[in-house]
Length: 352
Image (tube, rainbow, N blue to C red; front, side, top):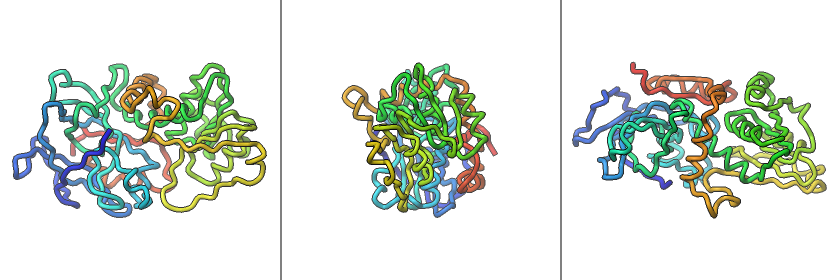
């Protein structure tokens, strides 16, 4: 999916506009969340582009906050070297600030091609009341997947790509270090493999009940299993990476899912790392994994991830809910370092 930018109506404007609001030039407008400065955000007006013949106007129902990535954006910690690669589809502005960012939106098509009208869709779009995008950028949400749960699609697509990078298979002994949303989704997929032995390792004992609900074993780092065939690291910490390396068996693969932002992270590659001939593999959702790239594109992968979201147990990964108009007040709390919780769902139907 290609990045598309547009115009914004001025940073810091906080006016609340009705659904039918239009700009002075007659164009429709909406409110969008902008990251304005370190740990500061606002709802700003943006003008919506006119609809082309294959464009859809979507009224947002829910969007999801990806805590790990959006915390880095919120704190201004996106490295300068990654400003281009980190651009989200339909992002406006630029890093570090001001920037309109996000990529987990679910809404209903209210204008556009006849066959799209009324459909619930997912889009990699920032947090915004309404938006206009080409229909090719929309992933239909199946009737069996509630709109609220569909905000997990982007993270599940990342987890799916990670398994392709790992080469996971039936009966593998699999360890996931880090029980955030991505780690739990990666573990949930692993637990669906026949005969797989899957363990979540996390520093929070409270994650054990959720792991059990998803069909995963659980261990604290000091009791982490050894001799794993595949280890996924998703804790975004040097201590977690050390644990992941310690869990890996002879010639095992460690798949790094964490994204650390700015700064240097020590990689503990001493000890038996070389003697055990371990492989440390980077996995990132921006490209389809090499094992599938000849046959899969981003759209097929997105549809596959969406179709997997029929399991109602995944609702437990959405631990917070906040009204869109309350975001400037609530977001510092939700994205604070060490804040509890997993995915935060933003509700757009609640009006002030």
